[in-house]
Length: 321
Image (cartoon, rainbow, N blue to C red; front, top):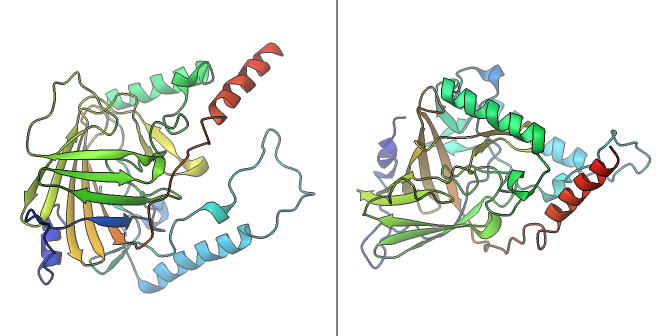
């Protein structure tokens, strides 16, 4: 499916209009799904799952959740240095794979065809190596060295976006529209992204968390172009022990398309372009589903107590050396 063809999905559906005459995207939506951002490499170029394959993936998650919800074995010895992690009771990855235009998807990335974030360009590799070296030398020297999610500046993962990718919980968004702007309120860390309809981006030296977003309407599709990202905001792919942070360049541009294709569904497409980071642009598609549940307060780690604890622990460890 090529970028922009989502309009074909709405041929038999006419989105309601706001008082300003724009297609109405307002409401609370979730992009939670069992489908991973990147495709399992064992599936190669297989984007579309058969019904049995999808049911098998969903059952594996259900079995994993049931096993993980069992009472903890208090006599079990933890690995050295580990205090354990989240119980999956707190996870909310949904219980279905992503269904896009009737296809059960094996990955949210649709291009490149292998469903993987493309290889890093040479400048991208150099930037990643420099970031890794800095982290190894002074990861606990001060708050500036810690991840933005850990500092409660943005949601972890690329939950706030753009691109807006689902994470293991709080993958919920509230969309509010006015005549000249669209606001996306992200449940994770209460990020709020304001998309201006029309206008131009600020000067290159102005760099914002979540970038600077300008939107326009193409028929019933809201097209959003975002540039001017804060240099400290990487793209995070994956969650848990398998996640990876990709530091991007000032050339990063993300183009998103929002099309309400059904009363309960927004078809979300994104394209990531950054020639100084990735060897080729990459694209993805994610269904956003309407929910009647409210957006809840996200208190991060209750007054940021965890960050002083992390740094204090590092200082104690230094004293023992």
